[in-house]
Amino acid sequence: MSAVAAPAAVVIPSPRPSGSPVGGAIDVLPGLFVPEASQWLSASEGRVALEGYSWMQAVHWVAGSGLYKPRRHRSHGPRSFGPTTVRVAQELAQLFPCRPGIEYLVRRTGLSERSVEYHLGMLREAGLLAYVVRGTRVRGESAQASEFARMIPLEFDAALGIRTVLRDEAAPAYTRSMTGIAEAGRELMAKLARKASRKVRKPRSKASAKASAKGARKGAEQAVVTAVSGEVRCTPMQVGTSGLSTAGTTSFPPESKLASGEAKSPTPKKSKAKAGGRKLNRVGRRYQLARELTQELDWLRGCSVPRIAWVARNVADAGWTATDVRGWLHLRGETGRVHRGSGLLAVLLAGAETVLDTPAKRADAIEQWHGAQELARRHRIQQVRARSERFEGDWDAPTSQAVRRQVNEVFTAVFHPQPQPVAPEEEAMPDVSGVEGLEAAELAQARAEARERLMVGDTSLITVAVDAMGRESAEQLYGADLVHRALQLASGARSSLMTYGRR
Image (cartoon, rainbow, N blue to C red):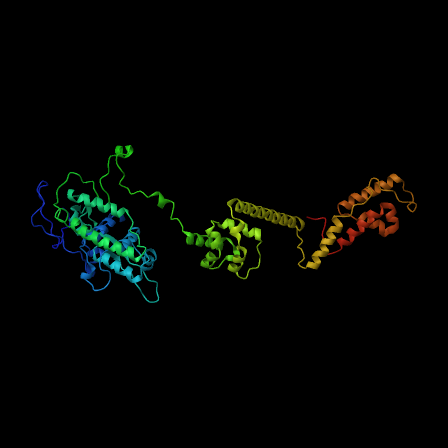
């Protein structure tokens, strides 16, 4: 028996031998209803569910027992504890801690705010929820959601013959734990376990909703007979030899049977269809493609996803992906200035599904797009590298385009001279009659020395000769080409726009 005494309204028959037939006058469980003052955890007569799975068993029992009827206590709201209330309970079973907001449940279930409030109130009145902290709504401040404790009603334990014990006498009564279950309640517990492992879905149409409501009412009537019958409603509290059963699971088979495949694991397994995710229909594929395009294309940022889905409906129906669209846009040619992204996309995608009508053609377009991207990337790298090598140092390039043009001309003229038709070694010796006392070997040595200095930017040897002897004599000594290049370099060195000889 439970360590916490049941209230006077719940009458449990005295134990009888297991071989005696079920008959005679027996007491019946009353209707479920918890008044508002007792909907707090500290005032609750039930026990806290340790996890959501066992709590969903109690929820399905209440839905099928028919003990709770909302219209007995109010004149408005839902008429019965049906599939919609179970759907709301499924969302609550997944929350740890159970602190749902009204907006969250509206978004998850698709119900209205008033409907969510109705079903939460029904779960509290049925003894399945209890307030831990009640939410607040203060003007000017953000609303605080209520926190609930998932409870298993005392009537559930009494109907299935579940034995509970309070292991710590100083602990509250709602912390009692389950120690066993009567033999007559095991079959119903297994049925509730199968229901708790399945998900209740939202009906697709009004006709299906009416059919499911009729089925729920029919199942509720049948469940009333099953759950509150003479065998289950007032189950004798027999003392069993096994105390390993819990409210959330059934007895586990031996591990040897699990390994050989003779028994199935009690843990519910996910189907392979659900593991791969929901398959999108035609409209879903359109919206998926539109969402990807608005994220990948800069000129589609901020555009309406439904509008883009309508624009790209033909290519989406043809099985195109966002990468296929990018490859096609590369073939058509993109623009850098866009006034209306959806309109431009409609023009560019016109007839695309008829041109690239095979996956091979789309793959070729994607390959061309990737190749163009790689070439553009390499070109940018070369530009950056050339710019850094050209203007590296302590000199900043001028901002004026005209000045930059002049600087480029000077650099081209200085560092890229025009090739001479005659090699320096075979250059014809000019008439040196004006230079006295110099032989041909000495003249060649002087020119070689001047050329070596000119290569490192030193023009002093030639400029001194020009100033001292004149340009004609200097050209006879060093050659017209060397004198011209030296004077050119010297004039550039006096400009503030040119620096050489330093890195």
